Amino acid sequence: MEQFSITKNCTTLFHGFPLIDLSKPDSKSQLVHACEEFGFFKVVNHGVPIKFMSELESEAVKFFSLPLSAKEKAGPPDPFGYGNKKIGSNGDVGWVEYLLLTTNTESDYQKFASIFGEAAEKFRCAVNDYLSAVKKMACQILEILADGLKIQPRNVFSKLLMDEQSDSVFRMNHYPPCPEIDQESNGGNLIGFGEHTDPQIISVLRSNNTSGLQISLKDGNWISIPPDQYSFFINVGDSLQVMTNGRFKSVRHRVVTNSPKSRLSMIYFGGPPLSEKIAPLPSLMKGEDSLYKEFTWFEYKKSVYNSRLADNRLGLFEKI
Ligand code: AKG
Image (cartoon, rainbow, N blue to C red; front, side):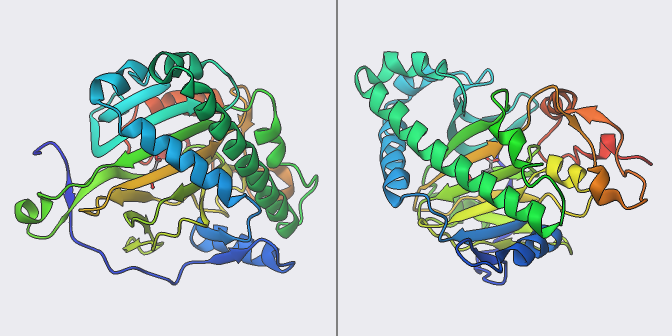
């Protein structure tokens, strides 16, 4: 287990982060505040049917319960498919296995058909139902944010996710129980997914009721987020930070293992088309200079692929 990082035990659950009720009309100023102060919030009354969440979870449990040799038939993640412990190709590892899928093609499912047989169709339907509801909610949040920022058009962010060419990704992570950790690390936690920010515009995370997600506050302190299987957790991504010229912050986060329970999470990463120029919106600049050099999503993504998870990946694109 030596190759895995261990972090100091920080298991006290923190409740002081923003909770947004999407059904309340006053959510827009709260949403803007949450993106400025935390880059992170929890959403309730989100409109995604619980049935879609539980059906996909049960499909994911079925997949991750298969023997390793069967799961590996859906790998390696190049970039889509099954991966185990290795995250990316630059030396990051974690106590995690995962499935990375595209959101707008049917191509991934060829790989699964050979493993699941007829059940592949059930898996595909569960992913599609879940993703269409989650994408709708993500767009609703982005539109409320545009209102809250008083910018037009309302779909200035959401249209990037709605675009047919949107380069969005879907990931299911399984963190197996890890019972031997307490003896080895004097009570520390093994890193399941190392600290990083998400490069896209917005990420929508849902997990089972096992804790493990931690976010870094502005002062650099890490806090543990209490799990809630019926709600969603939203991360501001690097691209949204750039589009708001740094007004919104992409949140640094990580997952630590929580033995002896396994954690299962599913994350929709809403991204723009590859050719999209990622730059501060002129309507938000009010005479300020851009903090960032100009780049396309393709250029940023390429740079991210060549970096380590914990690197300050936007740093290369900041104006000095
Ligand atoms: C990621 O996959 O980028 C994560 O941050 C994982 C979060 C989780 O699994 O809860």
